[in-house]
Image 1 (spheres, one colour):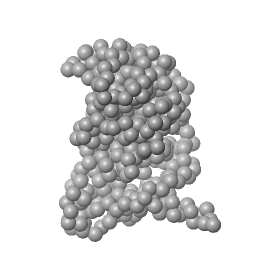
Image 2: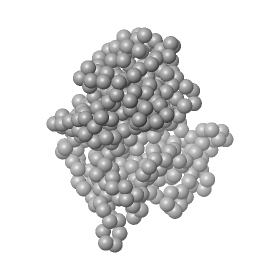
Image 3: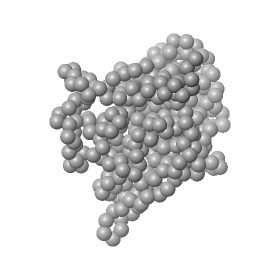
Image 4: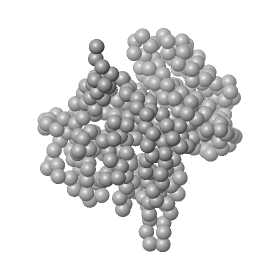
Length: 376
């Protein structure tokens, strides 16, 4: 029999291989990524192109991670310049430390990590506070996503607290359907987050390109998101911004929730009042400025389920006021092609009264899920 250390080594090897970069030139432009520069930092790549190599996905490894990490915490401008303060946040502190991929995180030394350690590839996306690039970590050969955020913009938009909270929460999460944050560092201009890279891009773009999904694919995606939310809620974390734009697609139809900028750690189950999220995914309690809890994520899961099988959010209208009016009544209208099982799940997720909504375990055991699970 294979000893446990050997088994762990092989599992880790499979995980690393799935993220490694094949540096051989490839003539197929659809599978290549040209090296670029960020903030004037040049890479000695000489026009090298990259191609992702694939190996079968193994089971996730779980390792306890009880060390403390330096988190760059943006603060307001001093008299002379914008500065970044460094705050120590222990994994055994405010947020319960779950198992993390410490062997991978160990490949990114927090003290010495700098932009020049990466070869910068194509831009993957752009948000309000920064851009995301496909990068290669030179010392390890790992391919990652690098989120680049300008310090001045973080300060100007007064999102220092939100930004620090995003890092704090994401760094401590380890679930197969949540994107991993491997490391973070900063220089004079920017703050950088080194994150897991998923080759398939945003679920939103896939929906926009192909339209509604069949029940087999949609139920698979709903189950994965439910599992991710269940993991977060058990750790007293509310995501508060579930939507297709924040879901990334990897190998073998695996999807992962990302963007924890609006997430909140709520250890005492306190009711919240902050209005956040995307209009089409807001719950009745949010639009009416009532107190809310983790059930806002359950409502958003219902909106997501509807959008997967229909191709558009259920309450979308020309104006915000009209959309809010339909949300407040949960004014659901189903096209005839939506199956009865899917209708039942969506209807029970989109209850106006939060306490009447299905809990996440009910979602995972729902007939629509069970019926399609053998075909995933």
